[in-house]
Image (cartoon, helix red, strand yellow):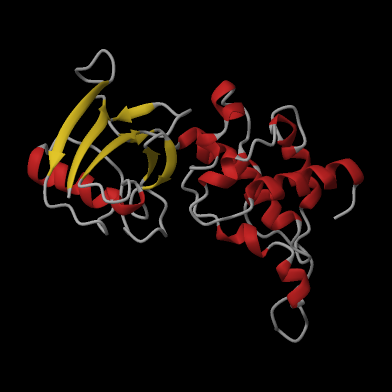
Length: 241
């Protein structure tokens, strides 16, 4: 199989504006990933290509990018999913995720995203004395199930950078941060739900969500992001967790 690959390139040290690098790859297997193709470009054709990648197994979330116009992880996107049935040539276009400043090629500045993440206190808070018997704070399976879905987030930013509200105003805390807040707001052992609700309930919190489901469609871990945002909205509106 042949792949005609277009990559949006930009080096701030020498480029005044982004440009498209075009590369033709031969002998591509249908089960090759987009990351495999980008590695071939970098290792065989153009060593100046810059991208983030690490585990290559959909766990670290570092290689999120726009692939044929949709956010995804390069390491989880197979060529065969992008090819028409029976096609011997595949056209593929890769760009950095939107809404964050491009540092070089496919690498974006993740600091604003991480600042939003930190703002929701994404860690367990409970200042009461631990159980006297030295055991961990126990939780029923039903209580755990309440927030199980939102524990899957890998902070790839695919959901937040697929959101038009985030593109319009980077002050919006974004879907990923709300998912992290959800995970602790609904944890029956945590004691800081009120603090998190104050963060996500302000002007640039959950009410910026327009429920268009881009975030849910973009999530590589199949988290029901829009549902989680709706549940946080419900808590803010009713005061009931």
